[in-house]
Each structure stands twice: as structure tokens, then as C-alpha cells.
Image: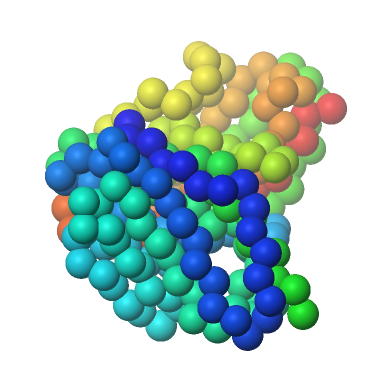
Length: 111
Length: 115
């Protein structure tokens, strides 16, 4: 399985943008980049995914490097409710569709 | 219901006993996943179903763990001869399972405690 590398933890101030990085230097051409987050005492929830182009949805934006070896999840205006563990995951739906979680980044939001 | 439902939410069992954990996926979702999560760790993949069949069970730690999905909907994770090390939150997720890589929806999990 392709691996991702994320910082263990990050801090941000409330109401400021947050940029969560992810490295995936061994990504294959059919790997989609997915982001999930897990709030305390909850199951993970989907945030966003993309293949090559940058993506936006109501929760976040995903910026994908041109060589696809890294990506950044952008929360435009963090709130206290965004404090969670954020997981960057590669999914190759043409080989199998397992979702393999790493350790993720624990995001702390400071009021 | 609207989401993935897991029952029970909590289960305490004695070492050596047998337990069953149930997952009701979202209606129409063909893919179903089981994970377990220990404190401070990310979810650990156990098994993945596509329809009734186990597409990948490479994450099951040993032969005490078994999962079924006989009608392609509800799934049961079965653990025989439980050990204290099996204590964890067991998570279930489901998705449409098509190749457009849609999102997976997770349940709230079953917290299993083996005493």
C-alpha cells in the first residue's frame, strides 16, 4: 500500500486558515488522495478527495502538487469544532478499495 | 436509519468468552469495512466486503477473528476466546463501492472491553 507522511500534530488559532500537509512520494497514477477526520469519541468522517486537480467543497479545499507527491488540506477559517485528527489516505480503487489509515495529524485549535 | 449503525455501543466480556459485534450499513452500500482502534492510534484495517464476499481479510489478526455478511447488508464481526489485548473500539464503515472512489461513512463504533 502506498504510504503517506503527516506531521504528528499542529496548532492553529481560531478563525485563521489551517494548512495540513501530506507527503505521498510513492503515489501511483490510479491513487486517489482522500482526507478523513476524526473528532473526539467519534468515527472518522470524510472531508474531501481528489486525483489531480485542486478540489473545493463546503468543508475544505484540497491542493494537490503538480507531481502529485504531496497535497495540502486547507481549512479556510478554523473553528474549535475543527479540532480533530486528520488522516491523509491513498485509495487505489482499480486494485482494491481498502482504506488504510496512518497516524494522522492531531490539530489543536486555540481560542 | 440514515447512517451506519453499530450495536452494541459498549460490550464488556470476560477473557475467553465469545462476542459478536453487529454493523448495519447504509442501505444500498455494497462495500463494508471493519476496523479496530486502540487509544491514540489510527483505525487498523481488519476486513473489507464487496457484497457478500470478503474482498480482503488480510487485516484479521488471527483465526479467532471472523466476519460474515450473508445477505450483502448487515455484517457481524465474531471474536472467539477473547483476550485482554482485543480491547479496543471496533469501527464499521460502508460505501457504494464503485470505482469513482466515493466516501465511506463510519459508525460510532463498539467499545469492547475484555476483563
